[in-house]
Length: 158
Image (tube, rainbow, N blue to C red; front, top):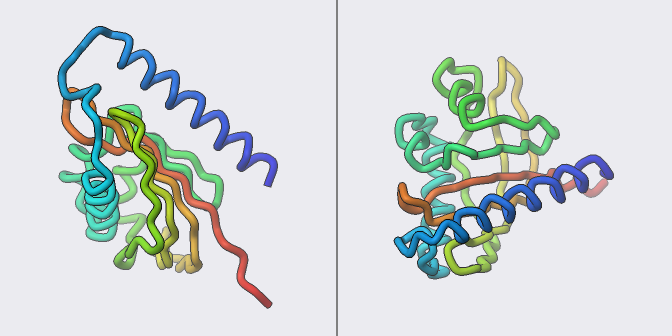
């Protein structure tokens, strides 16, 4: 549990450093324009749909070049590593439906949290469970993009 908290704090620190450097670049284009809550939620739902469909071509556009994916298993992947698992067929997801979303907007970035039921097929094994998640979204020169995802498994009640 401690390692997950440390990873989460490090990711958030990196993200805010990254966003701060983009905002400080003096660019008054759409990269610093405000998100709406609806835009953020729509982007999160598009992310979930593209992941469920293993649509690596559309995910390539949707994910920021510095995208980081932190699985509930604590596996950390870059954008390239995450997309490669779809391209080579080693990972597939059943449809992901975002539940109980909470959207917080911070100018040109947003954080979407919530939960989802996971059913994934990874290297011949089935992984199932309920997860809480956090998606960090930014407006960049390439439009609205996802820069980070983190899932945490919710223990089953016995």
